[in-house]
Length: 75
Image 1 (tube, rainbow, N blue to C red):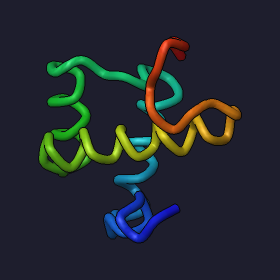
Image 2 (tube, rainbow, N blue to C red):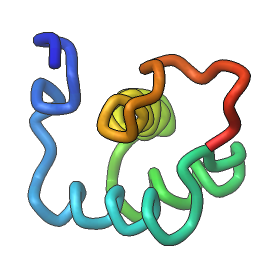
Image 3 (tube, rainbow, N blue to C red):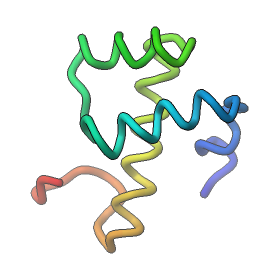
């Protein structure tokens, strides 16, 4: 992934765990209120949390053999 990917976000292990758990168990596309709760739980800003989800979704889509950007296929 490019240098502006998830790896460059410098997150703590516990933050990554919280984000990954929400990504797999709650939603790959959280709504605004869910995003706010995830941000509060992980100690990140809503903007940082939204960025992480955008990058993680692109990573997930590539792993699934789908285009990196959300298109006509709903995941």
